[in-house]
Length: 194
Image: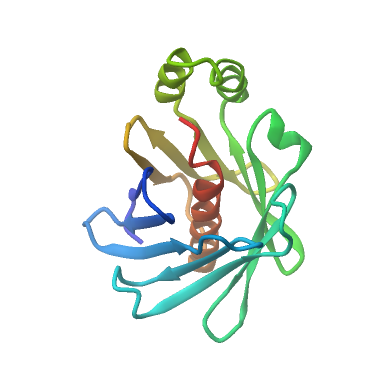
């Protein structure tokens, strides 16, 4: 993959759709979240016409507090999962990327203060909207030993969500793909912020 990767989606649409493009402008993935489901279900395609399915992401429970989101390819092969850390997510976003039942990578919000201020002021009419626009979160993907791998940065935008994914360290292609799938789910779960 050619970095940086741009993720973009419209905020005011019926059903979420995310486009992921690489540095050359080539579409890598088109993500479609199914609406009105008891459990989260996300499909990832190679094109916007949704003709070639690449992956599915399915939640293991209806309530997403500490839910596991499993990645599978069209043949049903397991590609790992991402799990939101429950109580810790109240102060800053924290996710674990799981492979073969073990934590392989972690996604953490870089500034817990931003989330705290946003939570505190975000409910105030007009002022909250301004703070949400100005306080854009960024997330870092790390190995359990602390090695930084990727950084996802949210950009200010009013009617759309725009993120940039930067590569910080070399990693195997499977891990790159697994972390991109996990970050797509993070974007869907955290999309109303910043």
